[in-house]
Length: 540
Image 1 (cartoon, rainbow, N blue to C red):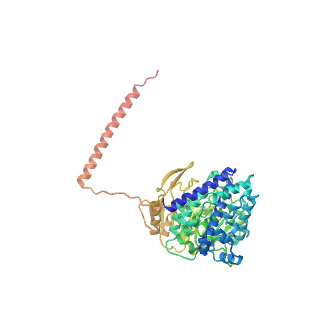
Image 2 (cartoon, rainbow, N blue to C red):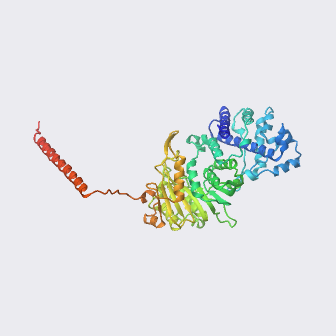
């Protein structure tokens, strides 16, 4: 195995060992376990990143047999200078904050308090860089008191955590990029990304869909661009988009109503060297109270927007607050009806879709996951939105995905691509026939192979027409089809013609006549037989 594969295996083993500690202290697979695992993992990562940085900055520390002793010997002013030289993605730690320091203090009384206070101090000292904000401006810091989730034996619990962390190091893999950390991040949260996760369960966009969205949006080299997700979740879409553009060439912005999602996105940003975007991560209600605004107070507009908005979410308690003059253009097609029963669908995605269209700048591009039913609906808000996309010439294309591309929902999905500069043709792709079905837990899931992903991306970017797969149409063509965006409705029905001679034609025709005559003869015989049988019937 390569060193990277070995380290990936060791990292997953560390995560498993931390989950085992939680299980041993009564926290197996619940919401509190999720908080502990993600915070402890982040603490370890930041600790090792700090050690890695100080060793690069000072050869004395790197070469010392006891580097911790050298670090502790720094005069206060020199230590401050050392911190100032660090990259912005590195947390500022004091020597007493290090895992090695906690390891040597674990026999002290009330060790759980020492452990918790260490994390709280780190969070406080790094709040300006690493805090997520809420709509109201409150800071959500890196860490909280985590031993409180253990009902008893708190000191023993914290000792067990530290002893799992001490013999593992991230120091040698900070050169790794997105693909490595995406795998680690997905493994870290996998047990909390299922229906069994209770209120902590959320639906995450499959990486195949995220990759297709990013590669179809970014078809040329760009720099200094803004990227936005109004319903970011854990950030899968934003991470793929940033990786495609270049982490140092873009600034990310997001908003999500879930604090859990905001914390996960922060972790994702730290792992993927996107710390500079953490101040733009907001916990709040995008539809009711969008946070990101320009200096004039108007809603900020972006170069790239990606979104997998919620398809079903109760918005009945705030929809009446949206019907104001300042929202007239943002929600140009109106608001979905609030259903009479909770079992009925609440199509909140239609409000996100309108918000995204409004939030694109004059050169903006977007990719949005929608239920496939949206692309053919013949009335209502759905059709009004499609009409706006076509009339304003901002539609770039649509990719209809295979069924069960999301294992957690049976809803068929398509991806709408917008491009404010696309004044030419539109590419419609029907990828519903691709993929391999596999079992994931109790659900069926369709997986796209790398070749299938690349086929979709290449077809979209080249705007190719492929028999029974893709079609390239004009805006006028779409209008003529009542604004339908389903590729299948544009496919040509092909009739194959075969050239034959007159003699061959007469021979075929004679064969048909003879066969038909034979069938008629048999039909007459059968008719007589039935009549005879009827005559023979007697009443008894």
